[in-house]
Each structure stands twice: as structure tokens, then as C-alpha cells.
Amino acid sequence: MTKPTRASIQLEAGRALADGARAWSDGDVDAAVSGFSRAALLNPGMPLAHMNLGVALRRQGKVVAALASYRRALALGGADPALHSNMGNALREAGELIEAEGFLRQAAAAQPENASFAYNLALLLRDRRQHAEARAIFAKLVADHPDSGDYAWDLALSDLYLQDYEAGFAGYEARWRLARSPERKFEGTRWLPGADITGKTVLVTAEQGFGDALQFARFLPVLAGKGARLVVECQPELLDLFGAIAGVNAVVPKGAPPPAYDLWTPIMSLAWLLGTTMQTIPVQLPYLRPPRALTSHLGRPPGTVLNVGLIWAGKTTPRDRSWPFDKLMPLLSDPRVAVWSLQMGERSADLATHGASALVRDLAPLIGSFGDTAALMAELDLIITIDTSAAHLAGALGKPVWMLLRYVSDWRWLDEGEGSAWYPTMRLFRQADPFDFDGPVARMAEMLKTVADKRAGQAKAPA
Image (tube, rainbow, N blue to C red; front, side, top):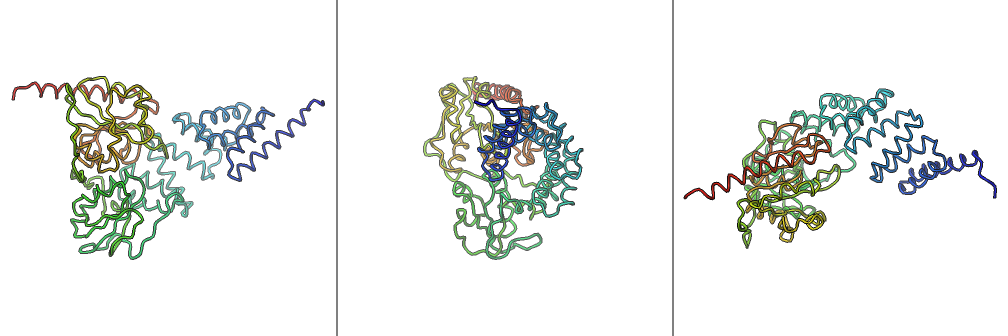
């Protein structure tokens, strides 16, 4: 058998690299990883193989492995600005924001005309809470590329982070220019700023997620107060809850034919149409109410003074807002506090996985809609949650709600402060850095003990 020569190995590695590139172009990420991996194994000194492998691994969600591949490419002398930008993007995804900034600034400085590099840097700066610089970059990108919906959308988000709601909510209309959220078309006239809705039937249409709908439902009573007759389209899980809102005349499930109307508008456009500012956010609570009471009350378990609802996991995209369940154990140590799980989905199994089934009572079997959740929340003294639709529901119900916030949070929670302009009964517990899962819980556990002490003292006080 002839021993492979260095030249033949390099040739085979080049073919493997080309195979990976073709697979990537065809959208076959797994085959691309296979090709790039073979090239890197055959010729470990090829920076391009490691860089391309990093890109493909990140697309597979294997960020740690992607970072290792990028670091190999860098160690081999890879100086391509694209490598620095890719490295910065992966570090951002991994929560290593400070290191990410260095790489992304290098890429942007090397090729100032590269819009993609500037955009990646601006996204990172927003995560780093450097909103003024991020906004300036987004504004230049919009000026240079007026047809880009992505740049316009992120400029709007920067305005919202900077609390310029007039510009931010006007710019929020750019969501219809994003590939991931095509605009739904309805017959008749769309309600635009300046139109009089007095005596008109307005169809408010569904869009985006449950949390968005619950947050912006606060504007429905405002419309009714302006003399509009409201028909509200919403996800089926919200029908009974939205049907109970004051001033709503009819609700229809998303996609069903609505009754006759004069004007229509998406629900997330209401803040823009009503000229909302930070000072004029409607905060009359509760603006949502349970559509019905529980047939069997939860009561208060013997020896406890506080009923607390708990939610710890939500969707992982576009960014994971969940909390590791084991990090919440300090909240379960006080026997005076009865903890009830409102967690839905596969993460409800965390109770058994972490041995907490005797520490937390599971209410998931009782929940079939947001109306059910609202009825359960009505019987709880406090809701502890991460940033998910349950947080908006609890806030809209006027319940005391404590929310655990990841370091990079949504525009509506801003970056500082313990309170929320949207929900007066909400208290925010923020991470000090992207990896701080203990600090916010420790502060919350201490406060929970204080509340339980006060409740216990009230229970002992003579009538």
C-alpha cells in the first residue's frame, strides 16, 4: 500500500473543504459539518477549514465547539475579518460579551464599509447596554440601506431601549418588512394615525406571541373609551380571557372570519396609533380578569402563610429567558411558603428530575388556557416567574409578581431599576452578568422570607 504523500493529503483535504462548501450552499448543515470536519482532520493546519467548521457548528447550536474551532483558526494565524466577526458572534451567543466586543470591533475597523460587520457590532453593543452607540450604527445602516427591514427594525428597538417611544413605536412597524413576520392582509381599511374611530367597529388582529398580546391588551379598554366597538382576533388560548375585557364586543380565534368591521389594526400597532409615551402608558390595573373562578379553591396548606406560583422556563428562541431549576432551590426552603408550579410544557418535568415533587405542587394538569392560569393566579399571593407570557398575565391581573431577568433582557424592561413602567405590581430581579444565576435568587429568597415573616406576624396578631 502506498503511503499518502503530503500533497495527496492536502488535495484530499481541499476536496473535503469543497464538499462542505457545496453542502452549506445547498442548506445541508449536517453534511457541511461532515465535510469541514474531514478537511480539518486531514489538514489541521488549514485555518479556513476550522473557520468554516465553526460557522456550521454554530448553526447546529453547538456554540462551545464552534468557539474551539474559531480559536484553532486564530491560533493558525487566521486574520480574516470574517473570522473575527464570526468569533464575536459566537462569543455573544455564549454570553461572553466583553470578549465578543473586542473581536467585533476588530472586524468593523478592518472593513468599515462592511454593513454586516457593523450590524453585528451594533447588536453586541445593545447587549452591552451601550445603546447610544448602537443606535448611531443602526441609524447609519438605515440611511445607507433604506430597503433593509432588519436594520430599520433594530433601529426601532434601540429607540425603545432609549425610551423614545414616539420614534420607537413608529419604527416598530418595520416588523412587517422582516422575512420572519410577513404582514397579514385583511379586507377594508387599515386604521392609520389621525383616523377617527368614534362609532366605528375596529378589528384588532392577532400577531406575535402570547406575552405581546397580553401586554398590549391594555390598550383595548382605551379604544372602547374613545367610542370604538371592538372585535378582537386572538390565539385560541386567549379567547376566554380577552372576551372578559371591558369594552370588547366580540372575540374570534385567529384565522376565523371576523364579523363586519370598519377599520382594522394589528394589536402591536396600538401603542403607535395612540401616541404612547413612557408617561402615558395605560396602567389601570387590573385590565385583565379571570373569566371564571376555580370550581375547587386551592386553599392554604396547613402551616403555611403564603401561596406562591412559580414559572421558570419559556421558549429558548430568539433568546433563552429561562432559569436553571436547580438554582431556584433557595426559594423552596421555607416551610411557611407553599409553592405551586404554573410551569407548562416539557420543563415541568424538572420537578421530578430535581427531586422537588414534594416541595412544589404541580398545577399544570389544571391548565388548558390562559383563563385557567388567570383563575389559579387569582388564588395565589405572589407569582415568581421568568420573562414569559405568565409575567405579563400576572402583571395585567394586578397580582404581585417578581420576575427573574437575564442580563440581556427585552426593551420593555429596560436595563436598570427594580420596577416596571408597564406593570406597577411587578418587581424585577436582574442578573449582574450573563452567568449570575445565584445572586438574583438569593435576593429574592431573602425578600420572600421577609414577606413570610410579616404574614406570620399578622396571623398571630389578636383580632
